Image 1 (tube, helix red, strand yellow):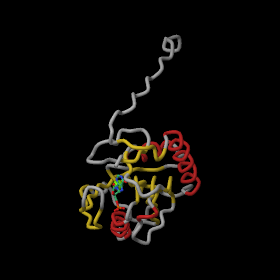
Image 2 (cartoon, protein in one colour; image 1 turned 60 degrees about the horizontal axis):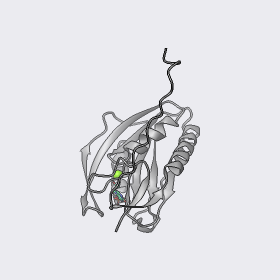
Image 3 (cartoon, rainbow, N blue to C red; image 1 turned 180 degrees about the vertical axis):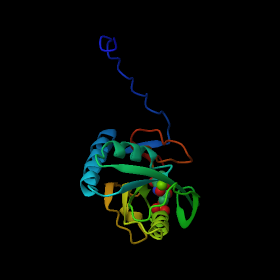
Image 4 (cartoon, rainbow, N blue to C red; image 1 turned 180 degrees about the horizontal axis):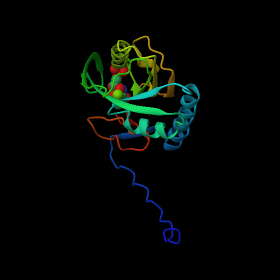
Length: 190
Ligand code: IMP
Ligand code: MG
C-alpha cells in the first residue's frame, strides 16, 4: 500500500532569518561530503579495533550523529559534558566535568568527537583526564579547528575543516545556546 502512495517531498526548512547569522563558513554540501569522507577514513583505521566514540556535549551532537552514519565498523558512543569557565566567546582552560562517561574506557580505542578546537584548552584538559583512564588508544576528531587561535600542543588525528578566526555558529555550535539547529556553519555577524 505504501509503495503505491506518491512519495511526498520533505519541505526544506525556511532559512532562519536572524541578523546575527553572518556569512557561510561551511556549506551544507561541504559538510555532507567531508563528514562522509571522515566516516570512511575512521572505518578504515578502526578495522578490528574496539572503537568507542566520545561525543563532547552539546556542540558535537549533530556532527557525531552524521559521522556515525558513515562508519561501517562496530562502534559504541558515549558522551561527556564539560564546561569551561570564561567569557561567552573565550575559554579559560579551567574545566568542570558536568557529565562523565557512562562506562569505563580502559583498554578500549577511544575517539573523542568535538565540534571545534579554538584555543585547545578544553580539549587539552579532557585528553589528560581520559588518558589517565588508560584507554588502548586515544585520538581526536574535530569538525572544525581555528589554527590561528591554538594555544596548546594538540594535533587532532581527524579534522573536518580549518576555519578563520571567526566565531562559528550552526551545525551544533551555539552562541548563548542558540543557532545549533542551523544545518550549515555560519559566522556570528559582528
Ligand atoms: P577552547 O577551549 O578555546 O578550544 O574552546 C572549547 C569550546 O568552546 C569548544 O568546544 C566550543 O564548545 C566552544 N567554542 C570555541 N570556539 C567556538 C566558536 O567559534 N563557536 C562556538 N563555540 C565555540
Ligand atoms: Mg565543544
